[in-house]
Structure formats: structure tokens, C-alpha cells
Length: 258
Image 1 (spheres, rainbow, N blue to C red):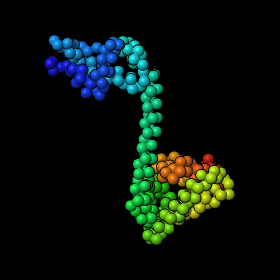
Image 2: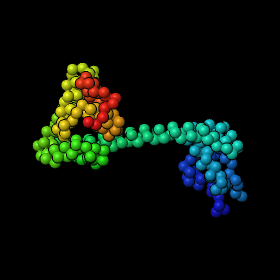
Image 3: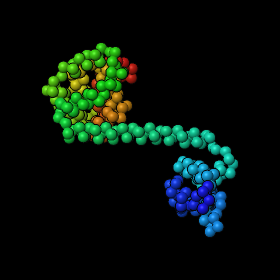
Image 4: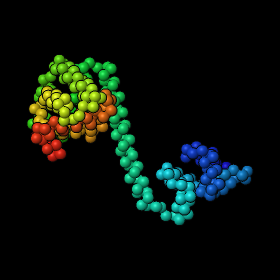
């Protein structure tokens, strides 16, 4: 066999398609092997394989075979369509990465629950976001105050924080299941409980609470943490925080860290 050519079986294994697919591409005139051996075997050149790769990219973008044939004959790629498809793929990639992050967080959260004490879970959860918090808020009084308070926490303090947060999340999950409306008295009480939980760490204001609540829906890790209790819980808690803060005169849309 000529060393510069591959048989149909070799090409199928190399590229990851079936022999049947290669035969079909040949039958419709999309990919004809450059040569045949003396025994009649199909032989594909490097140029044939490059053409096959191009075909497979267009197929992955769901272009019909007839359109791919037209593109290859013309020798001109449909740039606008490719740009549009690229943008759609990037959106899908971002969505899938968000889902992947959420799944990883759920794995970590559930593993943590099974293997760690309440105090250790609370410490680990705090440590998980410490570097990000320092990068974003390290120069603020709130961060400095939080760092000082946390440094003095005993295991009993961490257990208390963990138990309170767990009770809060359970209460919010029940409220969501019972269709409690954000802005109602019950939802406002839960929002105030959340504020109190934040005040274990620093003197949290309503403005700051609103911004914290926004991360529950903008950061897939927080969303996964809450939504593993009940689908939509992260969004409900954020909405409850916003409604309660608005009732205290806070411009939720213009909330700033103060």
C-alpha cells in the first residue's frame, strides 16, 4: 500500500466516522478518494482527509450535504453564517460551563455534608470564597471587619452559623413550596433573618445585602448551592431580599456597596 494514502478503514478510525458514512459521501459526490489500489480498494490522500475534516465541521453545524457540496465547489466559505454559528456555539459553551460549575458545586456541597461536621462545613464554605471576597472587597471596611470577626470564631461559633444558615435555607425552601410571595410579611421575615446571618460576619446594610443576594443568581456556584434544596430557591431568596430592601427605601437597581 502506498505510504502516502490511507484505506477507508484507516480514515474511519483516524477521523472517527463510520465506513458507511465515507461510502455515502462518495456516493453523493461529496468526497471521492483520490486513488484506488490495484485490488480496487479506496485510497485517501492528505488532501482528501483535509476535505473530510471541512465536511465534518459543516455537518456539526447542521449544514445539509447539498449546501456543503455547493460551498466546496465554490471554494468560498459562508463567512456570515460561520460567524453566526460561532456565536451560537460560544453561547452554548458558556451555558454548558455554567451547568458544569453548578454540578461540581453540588458534588462538593453534598460530599461536604456527608463527611464533615457542621463547624468544618461552615469553615470550608467560608474559605471557598475567601480569596474572591478579598480580591473584590479587601480594601473595604466590611471585609476588614469580617476578617477580624471570623478570625475569632470558635468551633461553637461555626456550628451556630452553620445551623442557622441550614435552618434559614430550609425555611426558604418551605416558603417557596408554599408559594410565599417576596414582599409578603413571611418573606420579609426571612429576608431579615438573612440580613442577621450576614451580620454575623460584618455590619451588613440593606444595600450590601441586595448585592450579596444578586450573586445568588449571577454566580452558578451559589445558584447550585441553593437550588439543590429546591429548584428556583436562589432566585426566590434574591427576590425576597430585594423586596424587603425596597420596603426600607433602598433603590434595588442602583444598590452600591455601602
